Length: 473
Image (cartoon, rainbow, N blue to C red; front, side, top):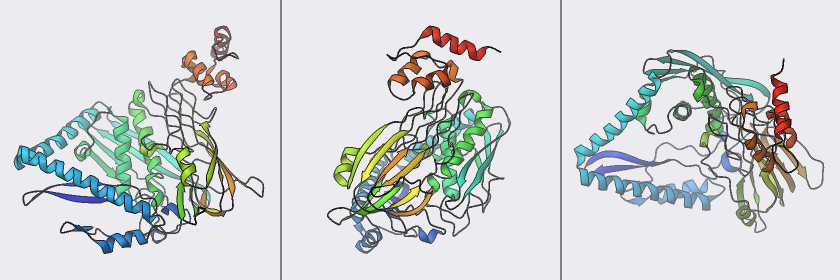
């Protein structure tokens, strides 16, 4: 993260910050997602807060240290410059505002914005029935062995306040899917902000009325030196899911269905020019969960980005990396059925023309990772297969570091959960899904009670028989 102080005269009034992923910050795996890590020292360079700009000049020694510890120093160089530039623009704009309004008024405005967030959230909480509501979600492995590891939460609603208590969550695990306390707070805030009114202010004041209890030594507050590079995704997703499931009991109309979990590896190698590269297979997206009134997002990139992390341009990837894409399309029948269906995963296949090393991150594999709400059903689990050019197809482990030769990588992204009874979905919407390749004709009849003819149109008489048949004793 880059944090730039903002001064009005000699008074510190704000920080302008930019927190962003880097393509690689060292460590034992490409992209720094080290699936084999068992302690934080395996996960790349660690730095205390350091002054990157001193007396108006970038410290060249620190800049070179950062680039030296990256497999993609050219990308880090550009990204860090962009981060510095964005915080400078923010600083200039805040200084301009303070000059126009005056220092005292500017501080009053800052406090007013925070106070507004506090009042708005308290009003949302007060509309819930007082009580204790429980939710949970799990990861089905510790990066080395299969096993169920739960995030459990009790949400205590008391007037205008919430206590989010993770007592009962399972202990921290061997692999790099442990959460820091800061990440846990962030994930809880995402879960709350997405459940309540979508126009709640996005600031610290909004969460003044929220207390978080995260026992030390658990998945949501791991003790050093636990590895935790993956924590924004896992258990970040599990934390959000658990909070949603608890709040959905307090207000079922706002219940959110679960999102499919990712199964996208990171890949490193050398291109024909012998230059190193790091490539993320984000194009193999997952399906988002549905809510009342809206289907889940199709082919998105996972819950923690809420659909804002766009899938990459595969034509551009073919120019940048030694790969050739075979397909990237909606995965049929992967969306969780519901009155509002879940989002569909992506059916993805790519030929990799050179030897590479994969950092496997298959959280959505083996078991269904989404869930339905109010009668909706979960989406399909993810699938991943490697086919070396000189061998048979193999199903790799969910996590790990795997050197491979030239190959074809095929991923079927997990589907999101549906919301509401699938037999209440409008038949015309089901027929459109069939025409779009999201639902098969067989799936339309089986999951929705809708008969679709060869031209993709609803057969109303047959549909009535299917739906009446389910309702019969």
